[in-house]
Length: 331
Image 1 (spheres, rainbow, N blue to C red):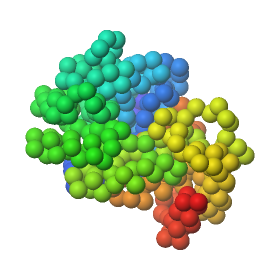
Image 2: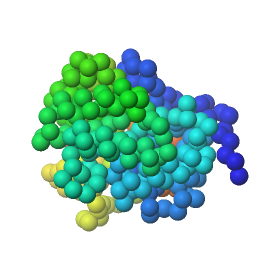
Image 3: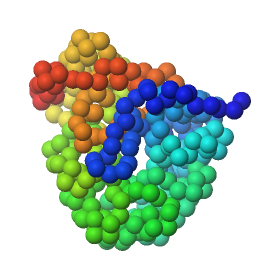
């Protein structure tokens, strides 16, 4: 059956400009991290991706190491792109990243020119693309001069393999350093994709939001629901063996899981008063800041995806609600 996208797809979800650049992103981008790789049937992955596009998500985020098996998330997206989305290429923002687990050998974890250029070629091959819209440096590499990484990414743009570049998991200091090089090279630089959610607010303490604005870029959060903690699944307690992404492990911190569960229940009470789920309020909370143009969500099934999209039905938070949320989070 030939796929035909919903005609009202751009009426479903807000989209935002990244600072004063020419890049526009839907308020929710779709990440394929470990949701739609080799552990899911292709038919299910296709259903979720196409439902995302039908509902206003035109940005799809990947990385060379997504899968779980390296490259399989890109291969999954490439299958759906070739089969269904190719006629819509001009509408899509397709992004990928390189830096973690690229391939075997000493270059496989590097941000060297050799590593990132080869990773880009592999990504394009897997996704059946001539170019990506944004290419992200997935990590800071202390063993490689940052100028080498920046110049390699600038070369990708000049070769037409990427339209824009960004970074991911960079601290404010690292972000500022590479942003200055991109400005010198006149490379179109659009932002930093980082772990950021109600329970992990390190980017606020680190000054990243202010740095992004200074460099005409955005902050693009991933893990907005803290791997499920910011849903109604853990209101009665967090399992001791719950696996957390490295960027979120500190959130349990002093006071442990009981303290976090108390916060989750208090936040959930506010969400219920707003007539929405905690997860939906958590997305609205991130998007309250114009320096956050888009939030990367993941979903392994269509019902999870559609549930997140409902955040847009009540996206505005009052000053009183924001203060109540802050009071809870700062306890």
